[in-house]
Length: 340
Image (tube, rainbow, N blue to C red; front, side, top):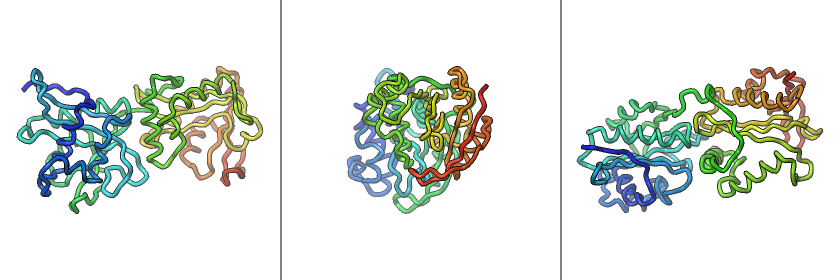
């Protein structure tokens, strides 16, 4: 059979519901129709409202006839008992199924590989759950998924949660780009990932990307700034074509930023923390600061944020002191990095 893998479209939604029914083994659990997946709160969240910015999927079809043979897709989900992502994580969760009677012929393997390729544009990692006794687990392992923890699934059985990192060396090939319309959907996906991980720093971009982009450009131009704010440049960090995080450079840090904020502030998306991205981002931003003529840069972090402290120290940061920041009620470490 000649099979091709294509991107899933909005018109595929009815077929995706059929595949969700199969992926969840609902027939084995006594269900008789795909509509029962729509009515199941835990399952419906995998597909309801298909076509969101964070939705990515692929469909396998027979070349020549366009007969659909299976599908795989992923989206960000609110955390719930039995989720593939652990508590405090925000990873897109995978659903995958092949039409009954066609399993065992390699279609599933092509689907999961195709999904990983399609998802890499938007996500640094994927997660899924599979029943412990399901032979498909070996297929996922061949595609790069590794077991992270075990869970009790929705029918009370045992499943394993698995994760696949989609970027081999995100820090090694990282670069900074200027914010632009071309990154709209990818930034919205990253913003939702932050939000589901409990961080609302970019939630306004989910429905208000244009306003955020305009604000970034105003700050870069030093135009129409709120009282007490100073001009500054924002860069988005990119590995391949995947957004990694954001970093902000203020050539001038007035007195109210001398304790908290400094010249440079940065953050790495939750799924990529601990992989060297922050260190590389800061190094690249310091190069930008040099081109602006800064002799040194003040970089601050919360006193208990040891990961950020290591990033700063790896870039030559010398601790001047630790001060109390009254507006946030936090102790803040203040580092200076020489640039001249």
